[in-house]
Length: 219
Image (tube, one colour):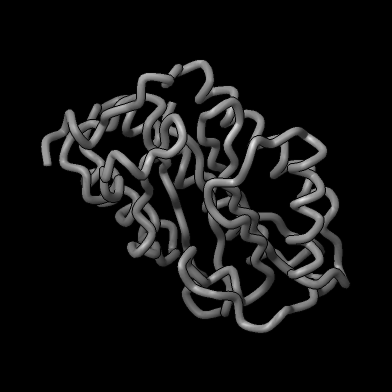
């Protein structure tokens, strides 16, 4: 498949609409994170997510909304949560949302910590730090998606964390992006265009059973 085919968009695609969808999805992430509290079940947080999205006027979701607590932060998108854990007083959770706004796909995710567990806090901070460093590397070098994930793995190892290379980012666009069959960002052998690709970072603690996740639009 050619690079042009992998970066195709529909006739309704507008970059400013992608930016709006991105920002609106982050509004949901941030509002929801402020409502998640110790004692809440993972399923209760997921139900709360639906209320926040509806209140903000979402058009629809384009992928299932995920809220992962505790050890479930090690799960990939395609893996089901184990049980329905209750958030502890010192705990970690992440939110991963894919929402359509004005016909364009927003996709955002971040990790949050309740309590004062220093390693959990460091894990959440590191996931975002890795995203920021890889995004900056993309801006500076204009390198391929493959090279971006090579760099992400290198930096994660330097910082003492394990990068989950089963998570390699993906396309977004005017809905539905799936018709363009672009594959993962980590397998894309060209420079990703602005506003079309989600960079995903998922890391795991080297010895303890938790991880962190962060994703955003390369823009």
